[in-house]
Image (cartoon, rainbow, N blue to C red):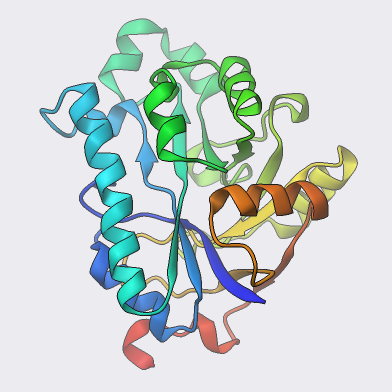
Amino acid sequence: MKKVETHLHTSPVSCCSRLTAEAAAEKYRKCGFDAVMLTNHYSRSYIECTPATEKEWLDRFIEGYYEMKKECEKRGMEAWLGAEVTLFAPYAQYERDRYPMDVLEKNFADYILVGVTEKFLRETPMLCDLDLKTLHAICREHNVLLIQAHPFRTEQHHSPKPPEDVDGYEINGCVGFKTTCEKEVLELAAAHNLVVTCGGDTHYDWHKLRSATFVPDEIHDSVGFAEYLRKVRVPKYSLTETDEFAASSESK
């Protein structure tokens, strides 16, 4: 079985992250991971952080994946292409110009896309500008899974979206927040036969890697991971700070 991270951000694409591709790859290597799925932020607020056009920004988003892939391959690891798409970001001027604040607050959420390819990213419209039903329809058309990230992260005003509009929910493995909400996610997903993922949402070198997902060795990319999730619904995962992979990179 491969040990995989399913939620990771690198700079400069995710401007909130303080991990370069090189630093992230080394951190995960030291903690015994075989693969990481890079899920950089795909959000209007992050586009606004740069002077780039939409095309230039998307080019940089994809380049960020290839940088991660290169650094992982140097260390005998795999990098898979994913994305964390934010809809109705209340902190993005673009969204505030389009919608009243009550609409943004009601619909705001982050979504992990599994099964992403470069072709999918280049041929679809700006995903962060869509509503949830439209995004879900586009994902289904391209065999991409739409997983709501950290749906119970109340510290950032997240709440679960309707089960008919998503393919699954994520257990919050980030040490920066007080609870994983593992029980709540498992119960909600089970009630609707949806997928569960468990991701670290890693942004910083001090983030301990307390979560990991385990998949068969024959899975080599995000597309294969999506196919596997459709079959098993809830993959084997681990979520603890006592296992060796919870250690920070400095201590290994």
